[in-house]
Length: 205
Image (cartoon, rainbow, N blue to C red):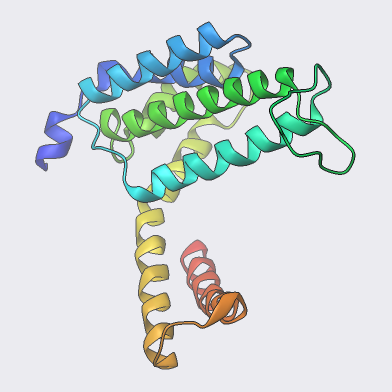
């Protein structure tokens, strides 16, 4: 058993799950901020590592899209200050507030998920979900089968990720140079997607 598993604190799992669910359904800024704070503190107590650039990039991209869509698609009071008009629609104050709410909800859910990876490493998340859903077996819900499938998915997901990285590197070496422009970049991604899907299907069998 490695040090990360020994250092895991599974008792923080329910707290992180509650923070994640609360962040996903929060309807007020105060609730979203509270869930975010709880998620960050619990994740830190669980020993979660600092988020990498991909985590931050995903958060920034998702927040930007959500903010932009809500800013112009939510009806309300038009904002002044030189905001551009897009397709005849003005940026609204209600959209600005709703975009902030969605950003906080997204950040809270991501922070809780990062903490769950530390609190319940490996297949512990599947075990906890199976325990919580065990009463549904009386209604003939295949909880045990679902737990087995989830456990296999958690076990093979890192292998598929590593294989995808390896295939991408091989494609880069075959090309002999970095991609030039978005078109070549998309072609490289497509060339690596097919072998990755084939490997996933082989493991699924």
